Image 1 (cartoon, one colour):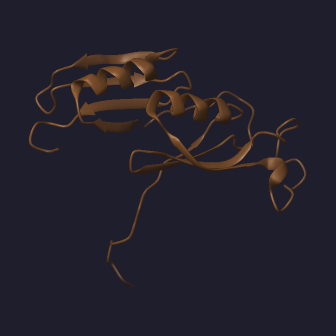
Image 2: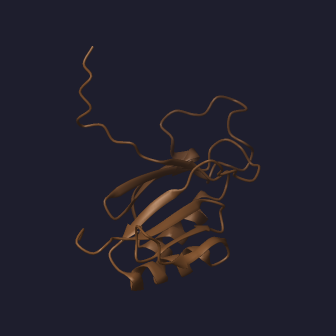
Image 3: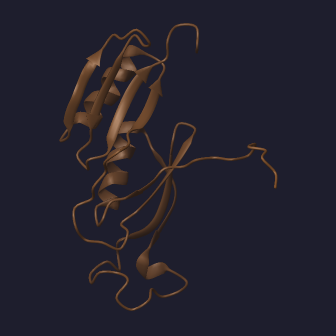
Length: 148
């Protein structure tokens, strides 16, 4: 068995339980996300097994992928209608300037909850934590000087 780790990529996959399209639109505005593909349940080449998809989910997002900078994030409405529960992780976003940190942080905090205001830390000229309006946790970091 090979133990080589090249060509491996970890990509977050978020389940929004009926709110995926709104979340993707929000990330387009807040982060400049670019949608690479989007498929609705009704457009699947194979129909879902009976009872797998909640009633009314035909127009919901079965799968989407979007890019934020060089990172691909995948998402879906999933097969549950209860409120999404994003706990135990945060997405860390590295930005090139304090001005960009301020802009992105404010955009993500709109309708969300600030967990730690943006401030200078020993590792970054600007760092903060926020949960966006969908409950996804974000950590915003400014690249330290010399790492650009």
